[in-house]
Length: 167
Image (cartoon, helix red, strand yellow):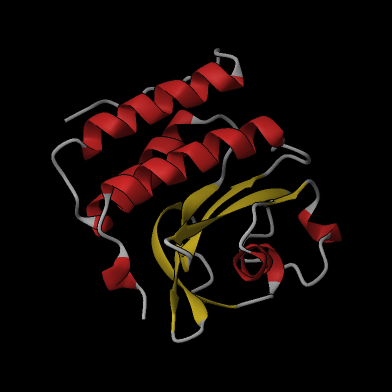
């Protein structure tokens, strides 16, 4: 078992390298997508400062369906193109929402969330789902977060069998 230590004192690029190294250790002998997404959500939620939700949605029957997460109860289904998650999935591109209440069509699963970042999981041209992080602070996420989280999603996709979670 590998510990997940908060890394809030580190510069973001170094913090994300540390998180990625922790996850690489967890994934070293494990390819199960459920286990790896669950551990990824836990490592991010406990390792990054100022989050109130971290988790996954998988594409099933043309909509995003809730997967492993850390935080309060979440929306179970999100239509493609709806809210930050559905927009990122539809665009197949990361979306940063500095103020979720100003984001067109925002879905308020937790009224305390103020900013959000969503990274799509695309493997061999196929959308599998998204990684979603929420914060109670405005403008919590920036391009350094996008770069770090994209690298973590790439590692997850390389290390895990996720296709059974999608149609």
